[in-house]
Image (cartoon, rainbow, N blue to C red; front, side):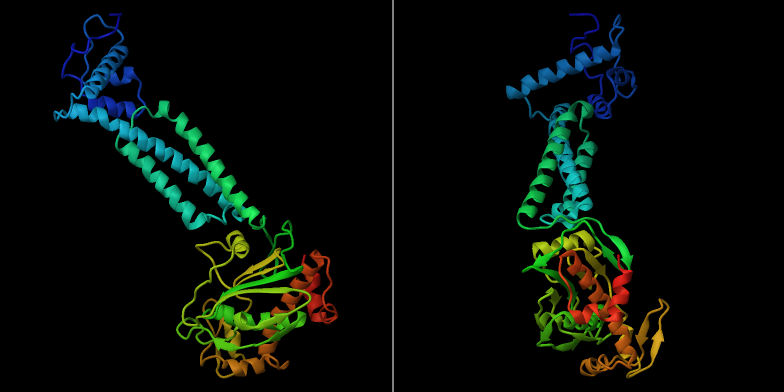
Length: 412
């Protein structure tokens, strides 16, 4: 036997092997482990390298237990034997934890940074977030249970996790792209609460720029915005089957008058109206969106903080929030208006009835008309900009309207 090597029977029962495993899991070298008083190792007389001696004893002991396990020697209730088996499962748990954490970690970062196309098939929230949390739990559990040899076992799971993560990202993005999901870029503010993603391609349907609206009948902010949207649609085409309703009677700004945008019939040679509005006016909910529409939602209005109304014009201009305050639904009308602490106007005695509001909004001398049409003219100017990007011209009635021109000249 060479110098520094110790036969396994040299110090039976003196070494605390569980403490040895614990210190190895922490990454301590053999010399440090051998010097720990909790380990209880005393090298034989004449042995100078205590770390090497303890390692030799450890390896010999493990080899003997391995042979004993294969020959059926086990199950005798020996706690040390059980401790020798447990790290194998811990190492597997560690391997899986690293792989899953890297898989969903890489996927999450890329899907969050470039949600379309990489976050459409499997959205960042909640699915990728859940996967990342599961990976971290597995990884943490392996450390709690005392996985050993972390440094020496880290390379393989890291490589596997990175490769699998990149493959998953590429596959999800490729599938999304092949199914028509657009590649979307970050936007910048252009004023009036709107943003522009200039690098995006113009979103068209049947050759016409798309005007998308996502909302809910129960939402008071969608309800008041619907009147400006209706006016803008009329400037670019013909609208029929127009129905009216109210927002939720139990939410803020209860019973705000609304246009049932989901029910209209729209014909235009200039734009394509793409409306996604839940019809239940008692509870706010967002309808399930097709992949393309969902791509814009994931890119510019992602869960869990998704807000409505959400508007996209030509795939380049987008807006999140109410076009105007629901308090405008009673201006000069059925009851006094009050101003809340947040500065929003509210109807102290309730808003106009929908049928009445539809008449008031057409009265150019009404303050309601002014509020609604300001947003309509802005929408018409944005639609004009989208036609420019598509190489098209707007109706003469739009391009000659000074109110629209004023907004058009202010938009980048």
